[in-house]
Length: 138
Image 1 (cartoon, one colour):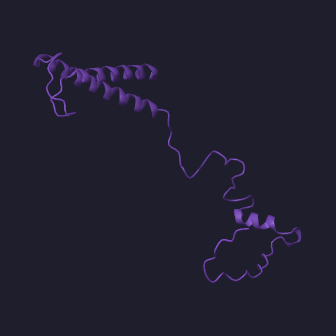
Image 2 (spheres, rainbow, N blue to C red):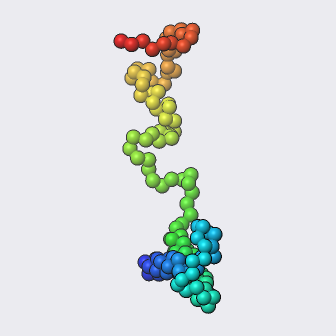
Image 3 (spheres, rainbow, N blue to C red):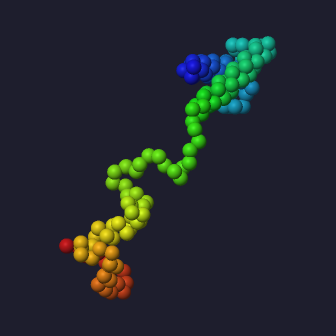
């Protein structure tokens, strides 16, 4: 069903492009004046205008039908309750046991005898440089 409507839609698009290109220019659009020539009578302009309007209505209708068919099988879902598990290598927000990722990483970084104890304070860092440093070549 959807394939048939897409084929009709594409045929309407091609036909509408051709009909619009056949219409007489009113001048001024691209700097081209009234050149005369093929299909210059007022009667043919009315036929082309009506054909363009009809093709535009069919284009609009097929676009609506295609958008309705595209959303037909979609079911609303919550973005907060994901059903897909995270890929490997991506940490989960809560580790097993209800602990956060940082707690798990902190526990993995400690030696086995110090589980559950707070980490020891880090050694004092070197004093910050007083001003900008010039890169040295080696």
